[in-house]
View 1 (cartoon, helix red, strand yellow):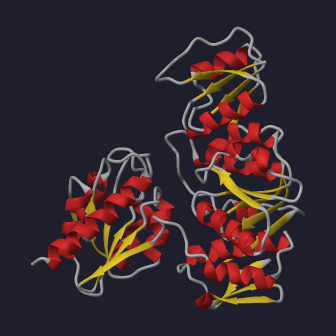
View 2 (cartoon, one colour; view 1 turned 60 degrees about the vertical axis):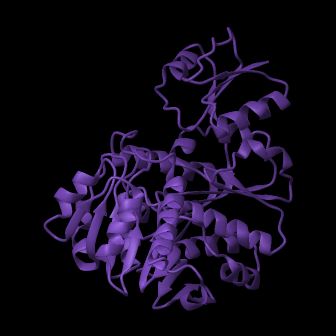
View 3 (cartoon, rainbow, N blue to C red; view 1 turned 180 degrees about the horizontal axis):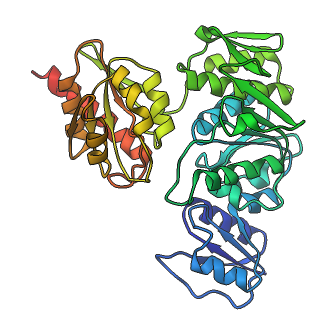
Length: 413
């Protein structure tokens, strides 16, 4: 049996290794190292970052070769229950939160997908009594064929990846494909797209209306289960949504309420997501490097007051103008970086001071200089990182390093 794997990043490499373990002779194809394709492969697996219109993908499809994604491949060798989580924002935190609670309760649980651990790398370890929690991107959902899960979650759908999708409608369609792949779906009632969906196998959560889980003042209500927000470590309205979605999933899985509460209270969140870094002379530094689109930037701005914002990065064609009133209300100044720095200056320059800096170190210094005691220096770029960094993780780590250097410099004065 012959197989082709297109795109040899982390997920492509894991797919190739799984195929070899299953007896396939694998030809790895990567644009950086384009090997000749075999004559009659029985299967092709493409990495999520490879677009559907890639010439090699098209050539294989036109030759009648089935082309699937890495998640689909892994699913075909998996056992047990699967929960799949998607959404423009919040999916990594929700995936990790559900997995953490399951481990807290002593369940055999796996985590992977877009989360950074390819499904193919552990699918053979799954068993009938295991629960796999997968974070899925729109790119991964596009390539699903036979995949089925017990529960799917769609947290929100807001503009993103418009450099790959021609419209928000196309992007939403990719996300919504997950609904047909699950027995039960958990959706955000407040989302303009998701809130209008009707179905017997849907459960909803909401910040504004009564739903299967909803926010009532400063507490989450889910049937008889009442959860005060002050008891939960992750702050911000967006995290309340993550808690509500996770709560509905865990109750459907049959996890006892005392285990859910213990797991929620002991989950500390993920790096680079409104992560506290330091307080220097009364100025608090927050690392929200995972913010790569307009909606994630909006949610970060809603979580703080008196903000000196560090924002900007790769240009994905996003429209930041809906943030004008929020910027005027909560932001004192903006330090803009990256390709979109001129966009931030032209868009917000009439509302607040906007300065442009060439790197993250000078941006941190300038932001500190603009801040006063009681202010928050917030790195929440609202853009991808690829113009200046390998990924959002490197951007966040460099920000934290810059804050440490600033602290050392000031301490030495």
